[in-house]
Image 1 (cartoon, rainbow, N blue to C red):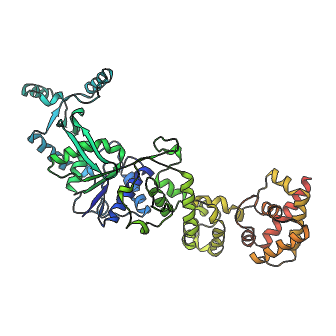
Image 2: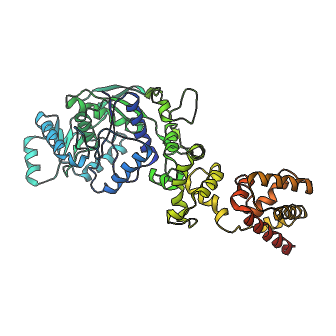
Length: 484
């Protein structure tokens, strides 16, 4: 059975680029009816925090991802926290030492840095020179007696390592250019290379799907798989996601962490859909799709080799599409916390007029790309309208005054207001003023909302009700007269 894993480090919030790797691992497992495993690489004790792991798991679940094995669900290949697997790494490391494929290195960090600088100055690759590989017994005993700390390095053979990447094709690395690398640090924690190879071996990982920034690590891992007497998994190195300026994705490009997108009110299905467009596309170039529609046709080999570019505008467009199509009851439930925080509705849910709220949300949903924007759009229904000086000047024109006066007079004849009645009133105003189109609608829109854009006027009038419409028109008729 195909088994893939997502193995993040809990040193910060899960960001778009890393979450994208999780998404494609999960999709690949779904496509092949395999297992998706979550493994937490938390051996960096100084930077790893439990709160980040908790948030990471919540964010992945929010996106709709599930896994068959992991720290929160268990599994027969656990534990799934590397910090709980230290004894495993130590046992295998001792085995490597006995087999002579690893050795103790007593070089200090200062010595290593000095040699790196010398290598750079002489035009040589800044690799470890393997000097501790050939220490005599006398030299080893002297180092041991001195109490000097040591790391454990893996002996890298001088050979070509070749593998077929599912995305990039045949890749070849000359290991004679690589120095022996550390597999166990002086503090007893495993290096990234060692922990990954050991865990992937013991967890029976069949496919490693990760970013192309790990491509150069792959030959080291293949050598470790061979040392573990394990057939290496198949590799697929995804292109990275860049900002519009072709630099690595960061917050300055508008790319937030998944938890921040959650707080802003992006729908998970919209964000998930967008992440799948980063480096992959359907043959028909369709950009909006349900995950269930693509599982049976997804092929990892169709992933682009070129870097994808994060486009906040496209994300907003796609998210807006999902908001417009989502069930109104769900939209209402998701929107309530934002409106409560803004003070627009009661914190006591029994006092919320859900029927009216649904009408409001249905009217404005086409103007938002995330739920936090609802506060900006609905304030015209909960607060007094503020008109800018430029709008007051516009409403003070003879034409605007004629339209508002005629509109107000016709409102006075009514006892109620509905979308159909409002449309009839506008027809009457149009006939009496001989103004139509934008020239007719704009003065009324500004007087009712203080804005030049927004929901359909008939929806606005229906939500505000006849009394509020009268008061707002009356107010601005008076204001504009005084302005003159």
